[in-house]
Image (cartoon, rainbow, N blue to C red):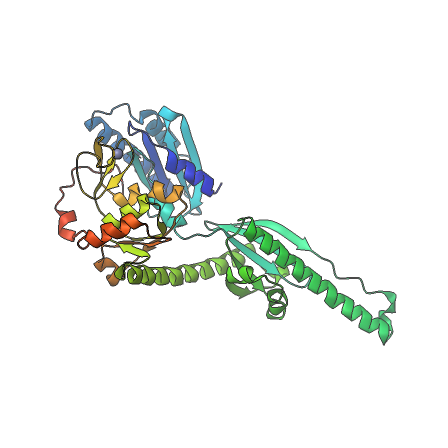
Length: 411
Ligand SMILES: [Zn+2]
């Protein structure tokens, strides 16, 4: 079962003040002889290490039942190399969810914390729009949902061509008439497909789509598309509806999606940097990004792939602060230290449906602190705060904080 956005939101909302939220990601080892056994050993090791860490913090019973359950399951997890898996558990809240994921996780890992650890998921979801793949010819159309590498057929529309009547053998009026009828039926069919697409986008079933068809049919469909349906088209590939396998469709869709993501990422980084330089609809640096997130201004969040920074999180209101102060400046309650603020902001990002991209090897982006955002608007208070702010949080400032906390069992 693949994850829906609603399910991810459910994960983002769970908070356990006793630090009993367990997240387990399983990335199958590349198939080789003893892979299955090695996976089993690795999972048990991770679970034991997490248990030792909890014991050393005096939280012996925390997450214990869930860790034992994971250990018992370790033998069942098949190393067939085709699927990864994620388990989210919090026995104190009677919570246990298992999901299959594409085998594209950074590795097998286990975390026990106050929130679920969602970064491996965010990497997968990062910039995945609700994507449809549409295959079409003169009388057939197949519509697929493409989510996290999984292709699911949603609709198979078939409009049989009108049967050729007995009069086909005669020249003149009847033959011309039959020909026009065939063209007309085809036009109706493409029009209908265009309608279905428009409706799917209006209802939010898909946000973007990819078209697979023969060149001769392409213009026939594209003539019928509503402008915003055309705008949502990410790319095209050549395909014969009747003769293409699901694997072929998937690999075309994956390639087009990746190209689009790369283009979009580059555009957004450039825009954010430019907008931030002119104090307009962009911010860079951890402090300002956190502020914009809390103000609800962020449209797109950009984070360096290896971004690491400490912060504090309020135990009362959840306020995140890049200043490592012991009490919340908003409500006065005690703050927790957050080892990886890039992880801590994910629940915010997911709850608010903010588009997010991980940015890789971009020196310009690195210079501004490896974190930035494009804003949908800029509130007054933020304009003031930015005018009075002096530069980005420096590298020294971040490095000066002695990292005392460590995450459990991450690999
Ligand atoms: Zn607070």
